[in-house]
Each structure stands twice: as C-alpha cells, then as structure tokens.
Image (cartoon, rainbow, N blue to C red; front, top):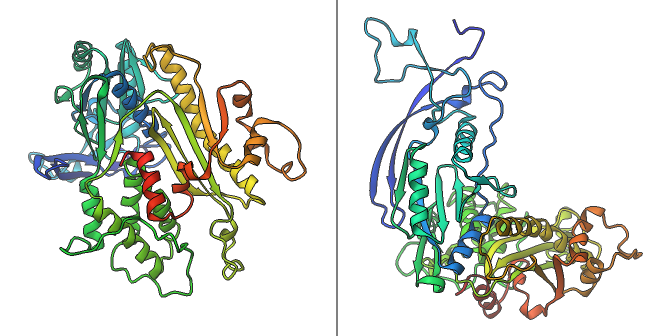
Length: 497
C-alpha cells in the first residue's frame, strides 16, 4: 500500500538515435527506460538535486597544460552511467509498456527500483556521489577548487557527468588508470590517444610533442543555426563581422515586432553555447541580441541574421589552442554608458549602464571570457573600469588557486614552478590607481567594499595590474562593435585566426 508514502511514478521509454558529430552517421540506436521525474515531490521522492560538472575554464587550462607538455589523452565514456549506481531511497514506478503480468492487469502492480534510472530529479546527484566515492576508494584525490577534477599520480581526470578525459605524460599510466576504473565501472575507452567529439565539440590535434596544436570546432551546431535562419541557400552573402560598427542595438520599441520567421530564443540559446564553447569573438553581438529575447523587434531579428551571415563565412573555424610560454593574463575593459540614448533614456534606465568585458588566458590561449552589462550605473569612466576589473578578478582568483593546487599535485605546468602570477591589463589609469593604492578619494569613496576584494592579491604580488594601450586592448572586442580591421586583429590574438 503506497497511498501514504512515495507515489508510483510513470515509466517512460526514451528512444534516441546517436549520431557522430562530424558525419551525422547513426552509430547507436537507444531505447532507454526512464522515470517521469516531474511527478516527484520534494521531501518525499527526492531532496538534493545539485550535481557538479567540470567548468570550461578548468578543462581548457588542463588541455593547454597537456599541449605545452606534450601529454597523451584518453577519452572515456561511462556506459549507462546513472543505472550503475543504486537508488538513494525507495522509488516505485509503473510497469512499463511492453511488459505484461501473467494473469493480471499490469496497472494493478508496480516495480520497486534497485538502480538509479534516468529521469529522476536526483539521478545526476546520486550518480555523482556514487562515482566520486569509488574514485576516492581507488586512490584518486579530488580537487578542492573544482569538484570535477581528480588527480591520480601524474594523471589528471576531468569529468562532465559521464563524459570524461584522462590527461597525463605516460601512456602506460593512462592505460593502467583505465583498467583500474574498469574494476568499478562499465567504461568505454574511445580511441588510443587523440580526443574526438566531446560535449558537442570536435577536437582536432596536429603536431607532435610540445609542438601540438588543438583546434576546437562546432561545425554541426553552426550548420543547425544557419538552417534555422534560412541562410543555407547557394549565393547567400556572408559578413566579415558579427555586428555593424556604426549601430548600437537598443530596445527599439518604436519598431514593428519581430515577424517570428525563426525561433528567436532557440537560435539565441544555440549561439550562446557556441560563443561560450569555441567562438568568443561572438560574445558582444550575441549578448546584445540575447538581452531582448523577451520582446524582440525587427531590428533584433536582423541582428541575429547578421551573426548568422558572419558564421556562414567562418563555419569551418573554431578556437586554436597553440600555447606559447606560460603567461597568465587577463585583459579587462569597460565602455562607460555604452548604450546611452537620450531619446529612450526616460523609458529605459539600462541605457545609462556600462558594458564590461574580459578575457583570461594561459599560455596565450583563452580560458574564460565575458561580455555583459554592469548591474548598477557607474558615475564615471574610472568607476566603470574599476567595477569591470573587480568582476574579472572573481574569475581570476579561483584559477590562481587551481594553478597552485596543480603545482602541489606535481603537475608540471612550468619547468621551474614560480609563484603564481597574473598580469591584468587595464587601459584606464584611474582604475589602476584605485586597485594599487587603498586611498580614500571623494569621487570613489562610495564604491562598495565588494569591489575591493582583490586588493590583498595585488598587495602580495599574486596579481599585478598593468596599463595597456587602447589599440592593444584585446577586451575591446567584448565591449563595443568594432570595424573590420580592428575586429580581425583582436580575433586573431584571441583565437588564433
């Protein structure tokens, strides 16, 4: 009698054809029995649901280190990952279609789960806790900075749910780690060294030893975007930049509404994933369009199509990771009241807000980037630049901690590991002075203490702040639309082409 306890959850068959990203060839037909988690009740059928995944900055950092050191790589897939773990509580499901109870109606019976089926709200967390527990029992050490980074001797193990990558200097050690994992999990080892398709991204490695170059591309995602925008016809013209340098995008409430010629929000979602994964030069243009997803106008639809035309001419391009040296840099910029428009200011307070952007790189390869509006109105250029500097430091400081931890774990990130050091490049002397000198100034005393959090890192030398000429400010590409020459210059310094 389950009338007072857990409810009987619907069982759902999930059918899927898995395709290879590069060729779209179907290589697996899957019929998966899942649970309808939407019927679960908090506190009865589930409690905690959070399950961590590897952060892209951490993943890129270790990929760059592996290139610099000429390491080997193994890509692993955990087959039917979630059901490898046991359920964390009593869960009951209906008898699924296709299974009959001899001499009775299957609706009068239910099944009690033993294994952790897909579809439950807590399924990801149950798998992660099971996975982590076995890794620790096998001798792996978990990172204190990123929960999905594990160390084993000289091997680094990065985890995104059930898609994982092993990196290390010794191929024999990697093979032994795979065999060790196979004692606890059902593991499929893909390939004998080169990375393939990972989280929708194609990895193509060229060169040998420490001269390796890794190219990250998403041609199938780009093709999907172009198809949605109707830009796949022969003769369609392309663009050399994702946004015009002469026009700023605003709410444009006076214009006709968007004609729904494509699914605006779905295309924006795809563009955001593309930008965050392999195409940082799109950040400004995509974020501008994403701001108006709730009430898009004709000009916003045209702006999205402009991005599509740019992708049409660069569909085979991606991010080139070709490390040189071991510098740890952060370029930061802000554009004070970037979208100011006196005609719409009365109805749109955001027009007075400043836009900020930054890119954090290691060995000349980008780890993390952002283009966003500041949440409050800065009263001066100096204040806008300092807020941008402070916000970027929130991203830099965890990466410093990750580098320190990697050194403790004997990861050879440099031949002679020096003190972790990050150079921050700013092009506003006022913001640099505030960062370096804790002095009370009449025009800046109102700055909240939350923006001074990184000063101790500057004072102890972990972070040093430098001036950079505006012409060399790579972060410009994240704060304003640029002309073709300047855009291509910053794009090359950002992603290598």
